[in-house]
Amino acid sequence: MNGIHDMGGMQDMGAIAYAKSEPVFHEAWEGRLYSMSYAVQGTGKLRLGLRPPMEAIPPGEYLRMSYYERWLTSITERMIASDMVTRAEIESGRPETGSVKATLALSPAQAVAALFKIPATRRDLSVPARFQVGQSVRARNINPITHTRSPRYARGKTGSIERDHGVFVFSDTSAYSQGENPQHLYSVRFSARELWGEQGAPHDAVYLDMFDDYLEPV
Amino acid sequence: MTPTRRDFLGAAAGAAGATAVPDPARASDHHDHEHDHHDDVPSDIALRVKSLESLLIEKGLVDRAALDALVDTYEHKVGPRNGARVVARAWVDPAYKERLLASGTAAIGEFGYSGNQGADIRVVENTDKVHNLVVCTLCSCYPWPVLGLPPVWYKSAPYRSRAVIDPRGVLRELGTDLPADVEVRVWDSTAEQRYLVLPERPAGTLHLGEEALAALVTRDAMIGVAKIVPPQKEAHA
Image 1 (tube, rainbow over the protein chains, first blue to last red):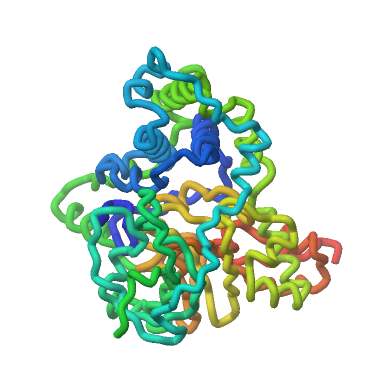
Image 2: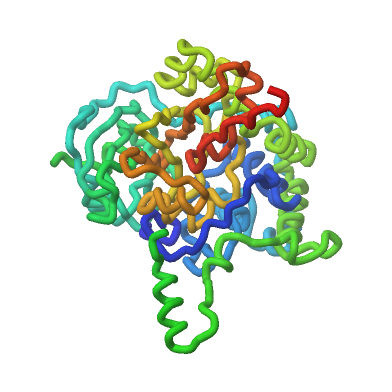
């Protein structure tokens, strides 16, 4: 989706509110929300990825919200989409009459283990690679209205394959539980001049990780 | 410093006799909650999260002690000190450095660091000719096992938007001015890979052991928004 989250290259977002050090969670609720999101994810019952609901937040709201406010929207929508809770329950804060108590809750040890279990998005499959290291490629001019990892600022631009990372689950479909479509993921080098014209420094470059489906031969 | 669009607006507004230019960035993406209210007046969002927690516990979807354990893990067990130990080892042990650059995840795993957001960590090396900078323009990807959870500014609109189009300006804003002949490589972590910068070992540290070196390594240097400051010469030396 060509949403506000896809902000690479925008120029009027102001100064960076840099802090030399800061607490891991600025307020207690952030930690509770963060851990709830992972405890729920650890049950394996979510059918929607973290990003799609965040990317669907209207732009004005997205910019106003803090990072973990977006997470609250995301986990709420993911649980509703996965039939784990209803919107009425979210609003009332109480289980609906007659709802059966689940036995999904992970123990502390299971929850931490789930967080540390490496998410298996790499697939040990022999899928043919359409591109080779060193080859010139163009980022396809695609404009899906759904989740994608191909940022707008690189679309239509020409780069070269710097590395083949191997075969990975395709986020654009897996985020919706619509199939893994395993395919090669490449590191693609785009020169700053190609991306930004004369404003780019002559030797600088941006490297993006791009799925096979995002690329076409030049 | 390169003039920004806001400078032009400011100049124009000043010429027109206006006294203040609104700065929409102040309101975006960052909430200074600590100064907004006191702990005894929970914010609306704190109440919504509390309500969600009790709902999920009642429905049997989460366990309160499990939530405590998860918070504790990221508050106390994972953070940039992990990454600093990896960097210091690479500085003193050439064979380790070679493994680290060839396969970041495996070499980092030698310390026992692994887990979420760390399945594929690639380590990129700074030299006197190359400077690496890490960003996630689409969201907040970050190598958790070695750096912990990302700081607010890393996830904020100003950093995410500008790091790819004006990395040198971002670095200047954060205090580092790079020579024109240094190649800047920006790593936009758009999918599956996470990046850790291996900073240059600062001059004057040959006498330091691994632990003392690790103490010099900052989170910012491993994101690539800062250089490592050489240690102060000891007064009695």
